[in-house]
Amino acid sequence: QVQLVESGGGLVQAGGSLRLSCAASGRVFNIDRMGWYREAPGKQRELVATIPIDGGRTNYADSVKGRFTISTDNAKNTVYLQMNSLKPEDTAVYYCNTEPKDLRYDMIYWGKGTLVTVSS
Image 1 (cartoon, rainbow, N blue to C red):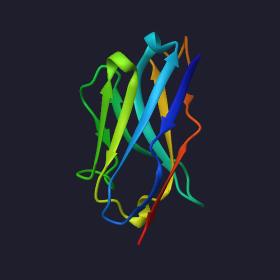
Image 2 (tube, rainbow, N blue to C red):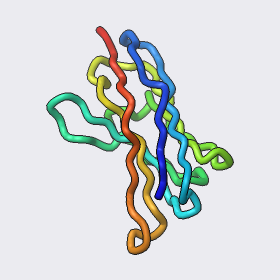
Image 3 (cartoon, rainbow, N blue to C red):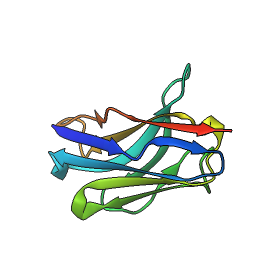
């Protein structure tokens, strides 16, 4: 199994910044990609950004392009989400996840989430 521990959420004013971290432990050798998703009240969970565990081509939701940056520290098995120019609509619980190299032999793992609240 893979264990994920998120940190860095909190309350920030609109226009401010936050940096989320997610540290993976356990079967990290089988991780292919790491990512961030978010779930706002009354809405479905949606993709925010993903990145290969060893860095490389990133993928962002249109709503966060140019404001959020995802990055990894492969040596620490940690993924970060730098969030700038935050908007009230970014308010959500942010979840870290991992995707395995092969879903036939492993599964997708999720963290418990960290709350981000952006006040207007």
